[in-house]
Amino acid sequence: GNSVTQMEGPVTLSEEAFLTINCTYTATGYPSLFWYVQYPGEGLQLLLKATKADDKGSNKGFEATYRKETTSFHLEKGSVQVSDSAVYFCALFFLMDSNYQLIWGAGTKLIIKP
Amino acid sequence: GAGVSQSPSNKVTEKGKDVELRCDPISGHTALYWYRQSLGQGLEFLIYFQGNSAPDKSGLPSDRFSAERTGGSVSTLTIQRTQQEDSAVYLCASSLILAGGYNEQFFGPGTRLTVL
Image (cartoon, rainbow over all chains, first blue to last red; front, side):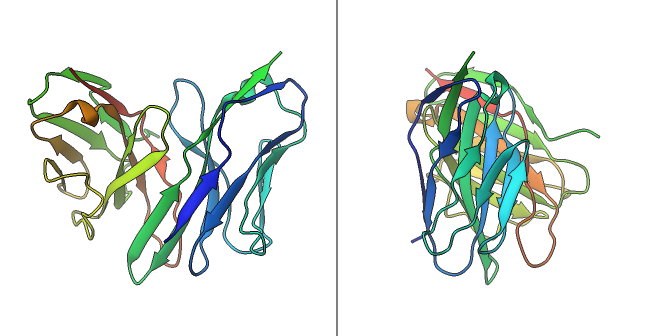
């Protein structure tokens, strides 16, 4: 079956550190991949997406590249800020024969210390 | 414009009571989704609507859960005879439906349900 596995948290970093949050997936076919973010007290919002192999999604300094060969979509940021503290969710979507599947990872809590 | 709204924001109920959760999607969004987020867990997909129709109800955890959508707009998620394990944040999202792929889902703030 289809699944998403992401790094367990919490991940605690100092400001300006380099961030990687790992996400790997198992899927048949050609899914689209997403990172969503949930800031404290706010609703989930789309951070970035990639719809085919080798696509790179980017937003707010975050990047993730859809790697089919390693079935991964790791989230990276070169220099994190305190305001990046949030829970990050990796998700996989595909639509086949009107069967919709959106599968979520368990979420990774990121804590950035000043 | 207005985003997805959900009510109530918090609900505390006693075991065995019925609860009704409401979602108002973004105007013009034809797809609507319900998820459950338990403490420390990822999102569990419950059900989605295309217009007023739910093609697949297999994600609902038990027959105590039901959902409906009327007029292609507001949706209600009803939990009958609540149990303590139903305690969670219930999230609603909506999106456009465009052919050929994923359409960004916009999430509401959630309803935090606590069953005592």
